[in-house]
Length: 105
Image 1: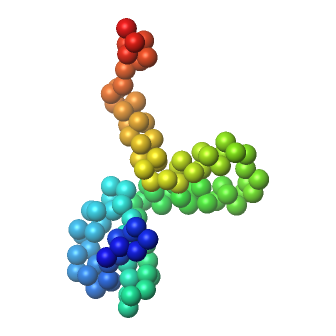
Image 2: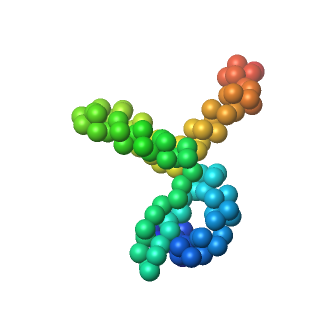
Image 3: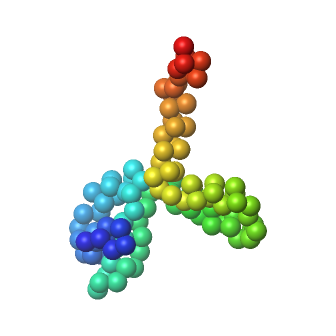
């Protein structure tokens, strides 16, 4: 079942299939766990949790963000944009990129 675009699983089903659900969220997924039809918990990968926790902490410290800062936070809070950024950083680390000179020559 999906609620607000997030897969929702009953707690008893989650408990019986814990390892498979942990595997699903380990790559950036988010899952809601319900009990008696009400969401009780959210399961997400640790990187997404760290990023969102850090961003929420920053929002408390800086109540008057500039437009550029807000745009950066929106990019980091959007799962797809964040994943694209992480993939690009991995490509740079592994050398899976070409310079603009190589691209246009």
